[in-house]
Image (cartoon, rainbow, N blue to C red; front, side, top):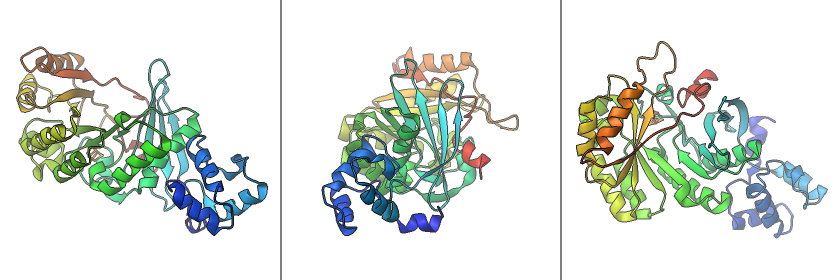
Length: 350
Ligand code: SF4
């Protein structure tokens, strides 16, 4: 099917029931068909009208001619030794979208990492997506459809969603908020199981706090000083560390939701005991959990290296076992053999 044909059809994924009702009536079907189609899209993850067996063959033929169940197509799928799966999808305009599905130890819980933009303008130097530059915002439906598509392919129910794939979610604020509503209300994943990770777009953190959605907000901090963060997370030049931390305190006051501090551990860059002390003082009064992320080196030419396990442990202990008394976890690696960094699959297929 050509992109032109695709774009002429109405994409039913992401439509509300009243919108679906209007559509089915407009193509000559009974209004109640809308609820049947909705059920197949969201509870059975259907992407093919032929699967909707409670519709007549004639109704399915009309639908195939006028509509489509989602717009993403699968370009690549890689499966790690530990079961983690990485997907590369294409939008109807041919833009690449990357998503990851992770399985936890007992296989009873599945977590999806999804993208909110094609490329990213923040340009963190350790991130493969950052090297792509910003290309495009994804629509709310394109963001949420990544989850439905992964459920369709894997036949697994996704329980947790993290907006940590390609893009800065809060630079695509309206679509991200709309996509959270689709994920919550239509796909049916509880809002407390949704995490949005930001590099620190302060005015959007304020707006998100006002909405009080009860999601988890994570900050990609990566360095406690302006000097270090200006380099690692260049958006810091616009919104400096101290102001971002203050905005997180406000977020907590509005939502009563503890935030997460993400900190990638880069050898001899941001992983010293002194940095751990500085971080401890910076977040002393913030209700937060700290997640230390061992860095995945992309290749031998990568200028960044992973911190040693001993140094990660020392960093953790300074935050946990001193008067800082923070809750700290070390992110368990997933899909190391296929993964390295978000944006890598898209780069490979660019
Ligand atoms: S780490 Fe996140 S914010 Fe930074 S360039 Fe990559 S996708 Fe963008």
